[in-house]
Length: 276
Image 1 (cartoon, rainbow, N blue to C red):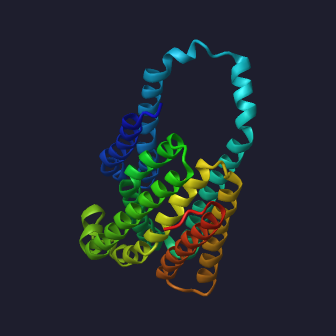
Image 2 (cartoon, rainbow, N blue to C red; image 1 turned 90 degrees about the horizontal axis):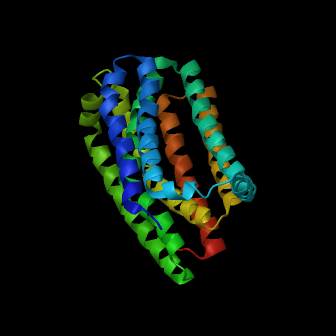
């Protein structure tokens, strides 16, 4: 049975913990910034452990090493692909950080990260309801037509939410950056509207990725996510080698996610007939 309320609570705790601690941790400098990234995840992990213990404690009495080994063997392949995908995505972002820090300087990297942090937070907040709802709901539906209809509905809502959110960020970027950071991050206010152009592509990519995960098509998601990584890293490397400004990296980010959403929709539509 899907515990939608518990899932929503975990996501709320994750966001609230990160938001509550970020101002305090940022005062510690670079170390505090690193801690702020994991603060929300740590709070969410504690909340998730609590709900697992609360709802499934009785099932632990039936657990045995044989059952655990059988489960591990049955999920090893998919778990490995998902783990490798996460490592590739994390490595991509770390590599981009390294490239920008070495070639553009810490000031440019700080402005880029400030704008990117707002984009990441906006996606997490605006997509939280869909992320809580769509995957367990698809699992509860048996009719394929109903699954495609529900997928299209959630995709449409995600596009509307991220598009409106992006417009709000574009119009308010000049006020939002000084409010959340300081007037020293002036360039971040110029980068934020560019990064917002990635939001529709992220909506398409995330929803089709979720549908493929529901279908157990982890190999396809790994290939498509890796293609985005290569596109983003390659585009960033070209911008850096040609001495283009930091805004070119923001344009590369936005363009790569537009391509990301397009090929996810193309592949997903052809494989599963999911259209919007």
